[in-house]
Length: 192
Image (tube, rainbow, N blue to C red; front, side, top):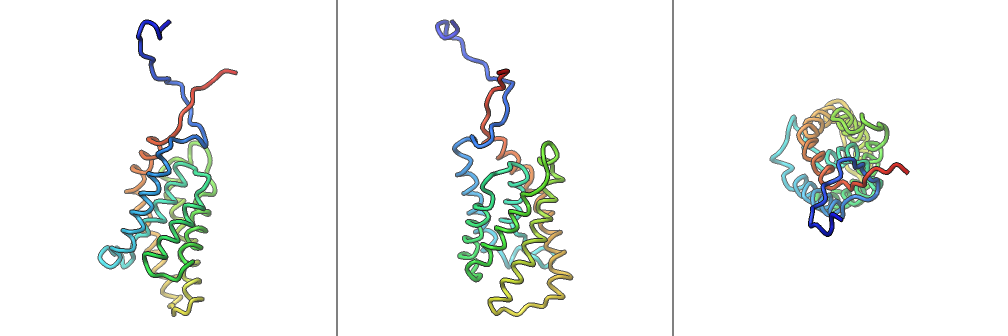
């Protein structure tokens, strides 16, 4: 009857997120952000050091995205972003791919329900991802013939990278959460 009288339908206030049926724009937004973060990380490397370490923007974005939106294909995002970082930064092909894929997998593990979408879990995901990323990357660079000072890398560079990435996560958490809410698919609750 409302259809014939010309009334508008009110939005359904009792809606729940639908896993796997996100808005079609989610893929494109994440793709654009991963490409931009990769380009920014590889091009502004020398002028954007904090505590002598460059923030790993791609790792921070993907770990925060894994904590906020629980994507099923986070390892594919890590693999693709790692390949893009390898191409843009001149690192040995496969180094960032493997390290970022493992780091995003570890960052996406754990946490459930309400606590997973909090800033605390996003910080924990970034912390775990950074702790996994740096040793894997150092090992892969050493296998490609680059000399590394392991004591300095483990003793000062890794803790500084953890601190810088956690600071970057604090700044990226709100925009990533807003992107997840903006692109989330919704479906009404049903009693059947």
